[in-house]
Length: 125
Image 1 (cartoon, rainbow, N blue to C red):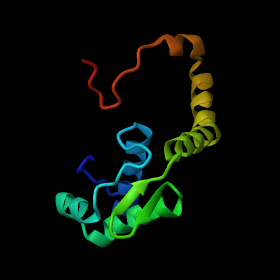
Image 2: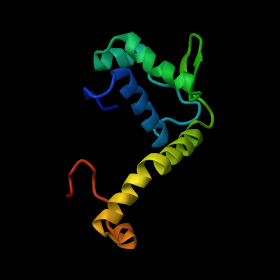
Image 3: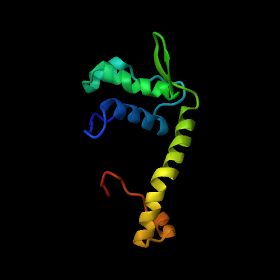
Image 4: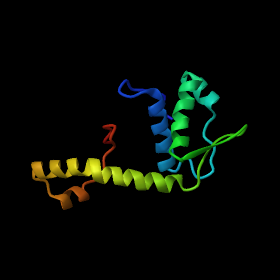
C-alpha cells in the first residue's frame, strides 16, 4: 500500500480505496486475509480506529468478512462484484465526460484505441 495520503478525502476512505484496488488488481484474492488493523496502523502511523473504520466500510459493502479472533478476509466473489460495480460507475459517470471530451476535441476514437497506454505518473520511459 502506498504510504502517501492526500488532503482531499478522509484517510479511512483512502485506505478502503487502496484495499479495493488491491482486490481489483488481484493482489488480494478470495479468502485472503487483509493486513491486520494493528500492523497497518503501526506501519502507516495511523490511529487503529481509522484503519478499523476503513475496513468496516469493506465489511458493510459485503467485500470483506470479520472472523472473530482471526482477522478480516476477502469474501468469495469480491473482485467480480467490484469489477461489475466499477464498470457500471465508469459507464454512468466517467464515460459520458470522456466521450464529450473526445467529441469536443474532434479526436478519432479508433486512433485513440491504437495509442500506446502511458504511465499515469508521467514516466514515459
